Image 1 (tube, rainbow, N blue to C red):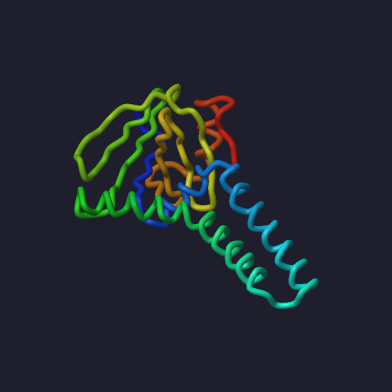
Image 2: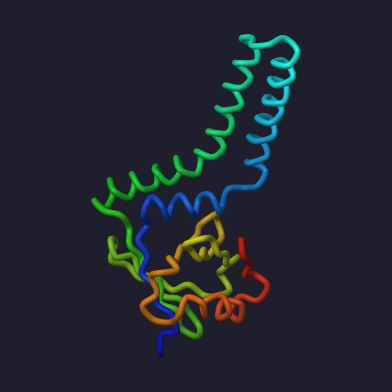
Length: 172
């Protein structure tokens, strides 16, 4: 069995944050940004009507807090995962995914384990700025850094996955 692609990726905080942002539901952005926009609009209306008031200041502060919470949530999730990995393994987790014609071998370097992943198990394949994400059942995902391919070319990866996972490959 000849491997077609091989990728070794380390789950750094940056990678984990990018993955968390990509997997955050779109409605979560709306629930944070729409109330923030409404608060800013009301604050501006109040400023225009009555000048600088405590009410307008509190509304702007609330809008700022909503935006920071909405955009900060994925970074907090990534930090939590990174801390858990560091506590459990004493290092960041490194995984090697080796793609063959009929199966993907997933090797976790820290645990020293290797498992098989069938292409049918992959729910979706998505692309972010620096990663390819393989989404699996149960809100699990595997990440591949675009710059970490030791076998195969990154630009050939999505076309290959389109053939293996028809209708499940998208760009986000």
